[in-house]
Image (cartoon, rainbow, N blue to C red; front, side, top):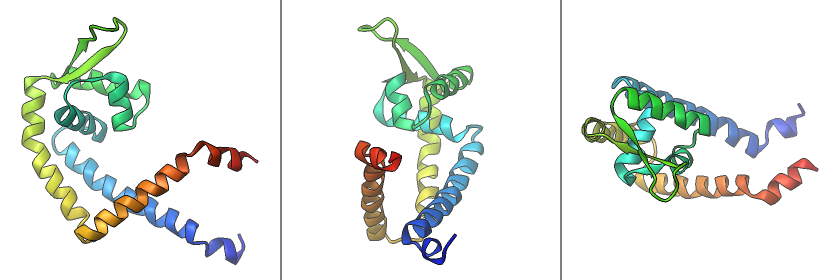
Length: 155
């Protein structure tokens, strides 16, 4: 690799961003595990807590896991009696995921501490800097997802 490529701001950003995400995810994973949950299970409970019952496809997109992954995670949460599937009146093939009483009680109890933990973990930036980083990363993600970028990468 030549010196110019190695000193690329884009490459440095990628490495720093990946390392930061990994460190933050490790903290979030450990916190979820302390309650007997995977991070994906915690994410599903949190989404259902804040958004209410959701179609499995909506839930999958919300928590950013695969179609097979959402089925597995909801199965795990059903076994723990934290989530239940409900039929969709408009489409017999579709199913809603919803919190059970036990699931709602659990997420109500653990979410505030989880949020405080994330605030501590992210306190390396001021609130103003967190807002700026959020906007910058949102723009970065949107650009990376643009279809025309995909076309230019293929050529």
